[in-house]
Length: 374
Image (cartoon, rainbow, N blue to C red; front, side, top):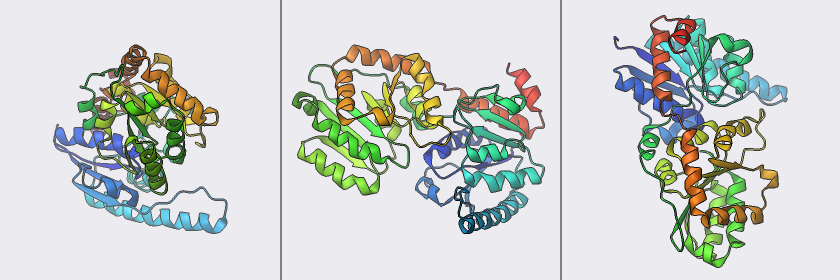
């Protein structure tokens, strides 16, 4: 295939950027040029995101009922549309691919207005608000956990799975090593790229009610919000816990691979990476998600037996401590969960999504592509 130019667009959080990063690597390896349109939050990934150029596009969330804030958000989106239109006129991309979040609105709307092939990738089991606004306009919809029979858009929806980053593919090669007896037990806790207040506060409390024997075995990686880091560090130091606590880890795939147990939210990228690597997990869906998509995302690993899923409202420090110690004291069960988690993984998603993108750029219809991959 001749070299083509693709414009990827994603919100500036890991949940949106990680699958975009995976696709960018694959398309670049196939000889294409790749550009990324995103927002200022993506700056922490600027050095590691593989693209020919990153474009920061003005964007805003339309979530307030305050008319002044709504007007301000609409004005910002209008500015984003103008910049996106300029980018598309300059780059002349063969297709534009959106990965969700409000920063995808200006580039995808500009692409559809310019008559460019456009693809949405929806990572979650329930379509996000920004993608819902775009779904009727785009050429095709690729689903991660999104069901193929997605209502009114079923005809143009194909399940590809969620692309995972090269670092995750590499980490997936590492076999699970159980921890028994007095062996060190690696516990990895994170709440998505933005961290989670709940974990930053609750994990130290849970460790405090664990037995002294368990605490001595524990090696902790805890991703906490900036404002919670020092308090969590102080609590762990007081208990002599071997802990690394930070708002962000740039080697999280490797840390997951080294983990004996992972505790996390159940965002689509998180669940996909846990399943690809194959690690037992306690998943705590974010309770304030508008569409309860995180609970739906966790369903696959739960049904395969690779994860326990518990509502945040039901998770006291005492219950969490009991769940962690149960995994520590039952290494054979943890091994079984790791194997089951891997059954829910999909390492072919990136290739299939790249095939779809190339096909749309060549003028193949979504019906033809679905028939070819039935």
